[in-house]
Image (spheres, helix red, strand yellow):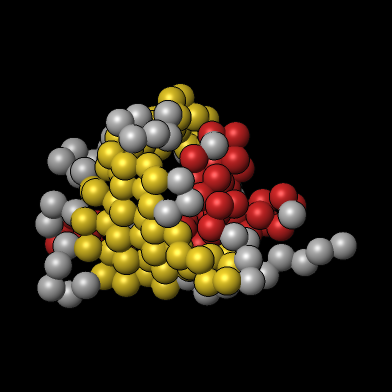
Length: 162
């Protein structure tokens, strides 16, 4: 029986820029962590808080592709969409992110997958918002719970895939 290690997630807002940086390590090689970000059946298993059900409406993870998904709970639906601007296998994803409930709220996200050796990966995500106010609204939305629970679920998925 294998055990799953959950590493600490760092979520930081730059006081001078409208950005959020998320850094997290995984006990899996970059190719596996990247695959879990681009294959819709895998994304559905880990993205977001545990209490939400996820429906993927569109998922075309390639340069020039797009995505749309819905998270649901007994209180309602939360809809998100965006465009994949660059998808470089095993290395980097650049995408937009929009929460339909937040007008004028497009963020540009760059996710990189750094090979740490020994089958480990450091994921670094930087989101750039329109303003510091938009960034602060994202931070106060409860995103930390979704990020942490989502990455714990990703740890579990990556352990199961070994």
